[in-house]
Image (cartoon, rainbow, N blue to C red):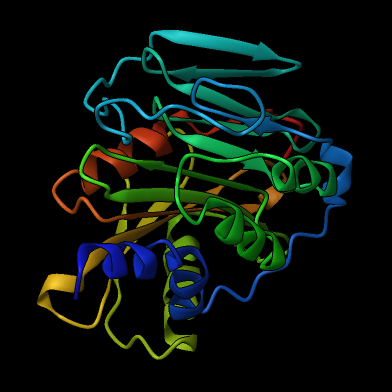
Length: 253
């Protein structure tokens, strides 16, 4: 399979990866209340100019920049783009050169008038919105490899701790027929957090890596960060770095 066809397949991982993990969750929040937000890597709208590596520098563990938005203070490595959703009490940051859109009706309308640099971005953002994601972001490196991320949430899961979060993750995986999921607790996280890893692709040369990080946030909402990467060597650092930027406004539990 050519690199172009592989890239096309992997750029559709947001929809396929969620189906593979059985993420049958519903966010009971009016997304339109978020307002229109389209964030690019350097230009107006959602159009950005990827850097030498669209995935950016992901090895910095100590945050160096902070954006204050309401009661959200999103800390992120140098040059990363904050994506705040203050009305939902959550935010994150994405690597330099990435493009991101808040998946509200206004955000999708703005996206329809934009020309993103990442191939397939508009289609995948709309697919993520159809599956009730809140944010979609993606970047492409100099070799044309695409990595992306989306954020979802679920209410009333009954999860209260890491053990419950592990059970919840395994239930999601089992509902999709994954009998032996890799579910590990994330040490040092501020909140109960687990990570599931998976692969997508039909053959040895077509595989991409994916991970879902589940975080028990305020008000007992389980937040889901799904990251997929064509650059498999970079994947672990990318997942950890994006997950570290997840920020919650503490409005009670």
